[in-house]
Amino acid sequence: MVTKGIVWHQGIVARNEREALLGQTGVTIWLTGLSASGKSTLAFALERRLLSEGKACFTLDGDNVRHGLNRNLGFSSEDRSENIRRVAEVSRLMNEAGLIVIVALISPLRSDRAMAKEIIGVEHFREVYISTPLEACEARDPKGLYVRARAGELAEFTGISSPYEHPTSPELIINTLETCVDSALDQLCGVIMRK
Image 1 (cartoon, rainbow, N blue to C red):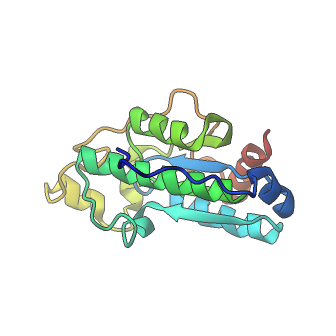
Image 2 (cartoon, rainbow, N blue to C red):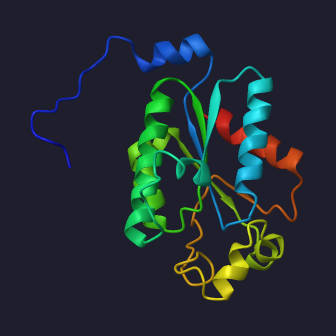
């Protein structure tokens, strides 16, 4: 919803000028998958690799954005959708600045990921499915969330009491049980550099 009287103010610096200055194209790598699938681990490792290669980038991690930008949101379907919308809007702005954005969000529904893709722009959105199986995610369970969800303490927990819709045509699929971090990073960098 746009408030009446608010108009987009067009700046005088174009996106391609910022990208030329940085020597890169602003894109968003959207890592989706179950809790404990390895999204955050890969996101922060990718950020480190890209920075070491002289690329300007930033990671928007699901837990981290809920400490500030999205701290007023819960885990209902509506709140999850709004969480994704806000992250997509921030990603779009950061891409406009020429930055590479790495998003690590469960983002369980295809419709919400499609919304994010529309906001960011098809040409700048790269969906990556971290396909680690539920059993492996539960075995890892670093935050104890699966145990709590199985005990009925967490409502609407993705993979247990709430659905996860795997992507139908992601740019890349990574199962962290079968792929080492270095190999995954090589593949992710390939997706980023794709025109």
